[in-house]
View (cartoon, rainbow, N blue to C red):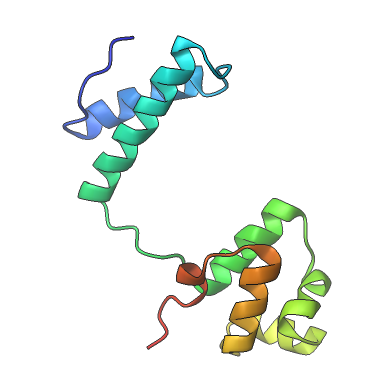
Length: 119
């Protein structure tokens, strides 16, 4: 294992390329150890040099829908009737605190993402 600090974006790209090769390494192997160290280095570099900020609430919901294979109808227990779901997904209605809590509890969407931009 030959790991070097990530000092610039070129180093970052090299780290990503190496990580792609060893990402599926079996736990307990030297490649899995290397993967874990690379992930930590990449996260530290990105946190220092890039401000991603929290996700947009609607984008966070859509991302979770994509991950879980959900349809707008599947969101009704968390948001309300289909019309309300449509309004939220089309940014015509803001999330209420009740919706935020239900989405967090039911779909495990981080509060930080669901409350982004709320003052």
